[in-house]
Structure formats: C-alpha cells, structure tokens
Length: 195
Image (tube, rainbow, N blue to C red; front, side, top):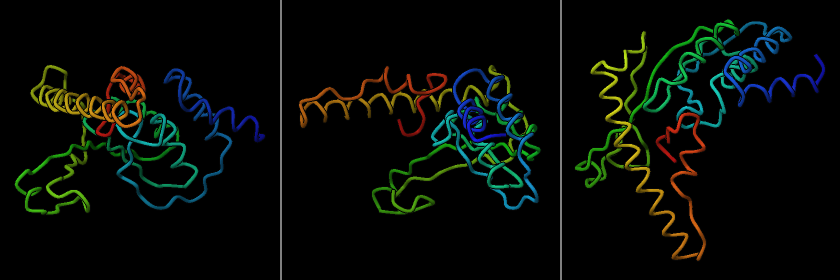
C-alpha cells in the first residue's frame, strides 16, 4: 500500500458512516504487519465523550499502529461508541474491554482541599465502571440512571457555555460560544464532560 492510499484510508477512519470507517480499518489492517503485540490500555476515550480520537475506529487503528495487545474503551456517561469499538477491535484482532466513566463531586472534600483521584481538583473523584459485559435496555433502571446523570451534565455544560460566552462579550466584546455550536461538534448531540 502506498503512502497516498494509506493517508486516504486513515482519513476515512473518522466521519462518514460507521460501515465506511470499519471498511477502511479492514483495508489498513490487511496491509499492516503488526508482529508481536505488547501492553494494555484499558482507558481510552473516543469522540463519543472526550478524546483526541475522532471515532472509535480511529482509536483502534492507533492501537494497531502501537501494537497494543488489549484495548479498553472508557467513555464518559455513554455507551454509544461500544458497538463500533467492538467491531473495530474484531477487525484488528485486539481483545476489547468495555468500561464507562463518570465524575462525582464531594463538596465538603472540595472545601477542605481533599484530593481523591484527581491531582489538582479537590473533592473531584473519577468513577469507572470496569468490565461492562452488556448494554442494558433503554427502559432499564441502569439506563434511566445514566440518562439522569447525562441530563445533569448537560445542564452544567449549558451553564458553563453561557458563562464563557458572557466572558467573551464582557472582556473581549466578541461573541462567545453558543450551546448549539458546542453540542453540534458531538456525534450524537452528546456534549461530554468538558464541552
């Protein structure tokens, strides 16, 4: 495979349809000699939450390039990318692990300056649900709880976007970000932990 074809396929790993992304990965993997794999990374995020990766498929391709042996998705407050991630890992012959991340805030710990597992934000704690084996039905209590958390997160992010917009206006006399523009950058209208 020449460099131009490789670049074309790599650019197809994000955007377009899931089927096209997975097809591009299949072609890239067919033209790649991975050799022995080493290492495990069970904490990657995709564009479904907060990440440099523009799709779950692109994240898997990076793991192929780095010869990662086991890869785990750990998106914030969503399982939306799991099916694409699973299929991409299958194509790449990388065992997938499924997790999800949420953030909790201990206001008393914040006031006392108590650090948990966030080294710079007192009171803030990252919670990870490791080893998810199935996606619960939408009407299940688990998914209803997840939707409640996501609604609270969206409310927080809307307020944060409004505050930033007000700062732009007041300090720079310029238009700041708008919520519709922020949420429009996400694949399913799902603004992540950090908009």
